[in-house]
Length: 111
Image 1: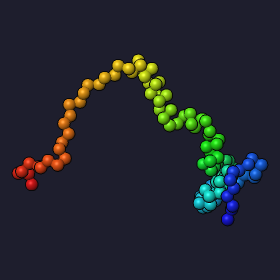
Image 2: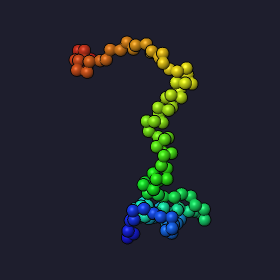
Image 3: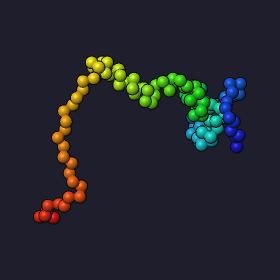
Image 4: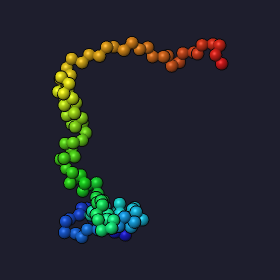
């Protein structure tokens, strides 16, 4: 069993696995993600890297925060407002809607 370290440092050796080996030992590969990245390769070509969530968030850092969540949605809304004339005078007509009474008795005669 591999002991999980707090974080990986660049001077540590990289772990490299073929696709078949990674598939057959997926649980172990995922557990070991905290001890450093694992490169997955096929026919001598690197395909993917498995990282811990903490390492990914550190690498993605401010880019991830700037492009996700509520701030990104608000930027998109503002861009749409500007594109379609500001969006300040939007007043849709009221919908004439009467909800059905959920506990009303059904009409007799239909059975």
